Image 1 (tube, protein in one colour):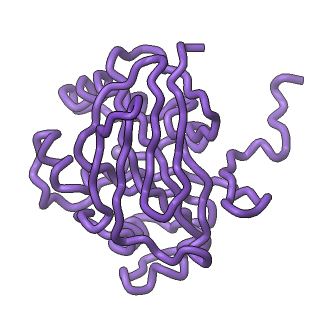
Image 2 (cartoon, rainbow, N blue to C red):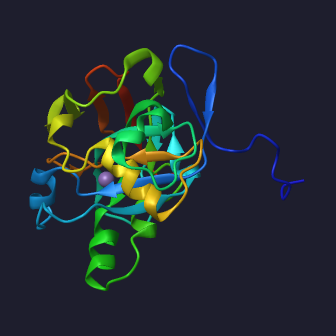
Length: 229
Ligand code: MN
């Protein structure tokens, strides 16, 4: 029966080095968290953090990512993704680390033309940021294995050409500050993911493009953009 939502249909992400999967609840994303990217989008880097969301169903681990409909300007944004393991509510930054399960490389795919229109009309970004396949993600590496990456290269190549290049140390708001900030507005729950913003160099993707996204110390994320389904 097509209308019955099966048990176990909840989106999840692979955990590196195990057969476990991390069951995903919500996907939060931070806007403009690297000064150079804030500037390339025409903004002041000293603004407080702001957030938008993607549906958990936007996550995709496939090697093939379909070009979405209703856009002529699909952009890549490579980001460090933080996986939350324990409830976080009204925390100060120094108390957030025990809430972190681990880290992954993610790409916040964006229909930039739809986003530009939404900005112009002061409308929500939702459809520019969230659709099935809008959030390619690699395996989550537990912090128990790799600690908490705060310094290190973050980059994205398209067809072997470097497009984005930055360093985690250049984040305007640290992972701890982001979690603390969010935790004052809402209770973070086990299973929540946070995309922590992208360095400069965002740009367009087309069907056939091979994307390789990396963060020092984390497994590579590789996928190809394919023709719309
Ligand atoms: Mn982003």
